[in-house]
Length: 198
Image (cartoon, rainbow, N blue to C red; front, side):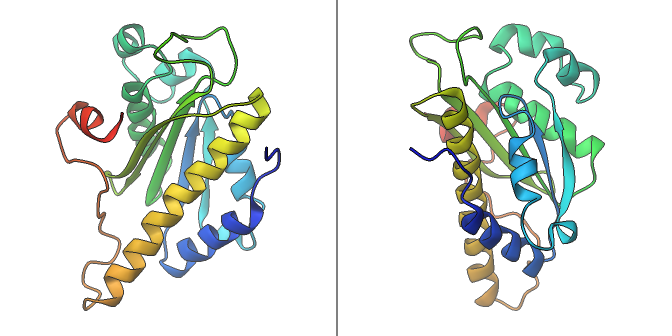
């Protein structure tokens, strides 16, 4: 099982971001800054990477990202609802085109249940406020292996979106540049999670 980031894939993602003139920022709970750090290793990272926030503790989610404490109490910090909330909160804190949020359970001691075991991770991405991907995945392995797999999966989700966006633009007149083509439903509030998440 992989224990190191796939830097080749991250570089491909970086090249696409630069080519499309897009910037990115990350809100990370379970991965605690690992995604942002790995993306910083790409060539010319300064052309696309704005930065990130490691919001491991719930208080940071509430104080810095303005997540409603009731949302955390109701759904737990490791949930699709809170993942969406930290992503949208980050958009108010760091100016970028793309914002990505990640929460989950890399080790015991959180909100794990039979339905949500250790290894469950939640990812959410937006472009200019519109959803471009949302996913719940359960990874096997040690905490480090879960984190590395999470970085790789987010990289793949982002790359898939960027490649599709690039292909779509090549078939039109370019007038839709930087407009989100969402891979999730466009429901209001948290309704979209019930459609796009298992």
